[in-house]
Length: 357
Image 1 (spheres, rainbow, N blue to C red):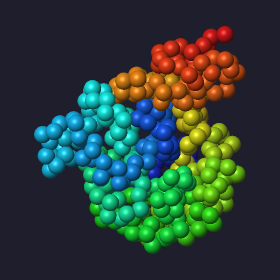
Image 2 (image 1 turned 90 degrees about the vertical axis):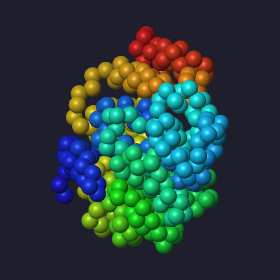
Image 3 (image 1 turned 60 degrees about the vertical axis):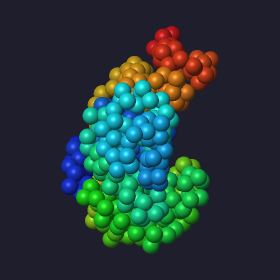
Image 4 (image 1 turned 180 degrees about the vertical axis):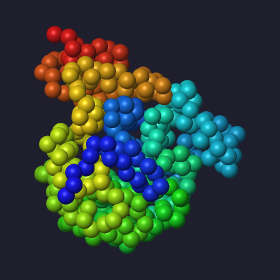
């Protein structure tokens, strides 16, 4: 089986992708700043965090309440498209910073082409979401059918759809009929049992333009080991592009994923605190990783500050700063970082951890 080349190009539907190393969607992680930093360090395509279709459709009126009482419902979409995604508008209307759905849809210019991930199990609502102007700004729409989080599967969404092929197929078909954007599906090996090949074929038959397979059961969450054989079997079972996902953290695990024959490789937790992993896997020399981590953290914060005020950001960024500090042994400073109440002080503490002796 031929080895994937670092600079291989590929197509998803009618969208040309200049490369095949992708950043996975990660809830609470892949914000606009993190995605933009990863693109700057070699990620060829980035997914947003998963966005609730119901939250987008039914939360729209609530989102606008108190912002402009004179907006008519018929004008909502125009208002949202022109103003909600404007960085200064968001920054000056702190109530919008707290609206999860809106903040997940922010993007930077260097993300093009860009992918939004939707989740839901109602075909009609998913179709409405695909038509929404905030979703239409993206180049590719991905459907989450792999999330194992209890609060998602309890509602019959995410990986729970792998137990209902008929409903999953209806969701894909509804999305395809609603938009001319490429539709992709991200799923797992199965919910409690392996149905990956059958599910992949169903996705293809329903019209999916590409699929992403994570080589674990939903019931395994993130434990155990990735099943490379099931990823290989999925690749061999369909004609549409297949993206392999699961535990790619270095060249060894990257090469294991390449051996499955996938068209592209998706990296998730391997990029935490290390957005330059994409450049490393492309063969670029990285001499001082600690200096690069600090640079990434500063860029990450700078991008988010364009959209959000520090009082919102400081608690959110603590986890990211700790990921950037991973590998260092300064326990006391890490504890200080975990409790920081000032973002600039947090960055100074990170610098002490990574650079200063």
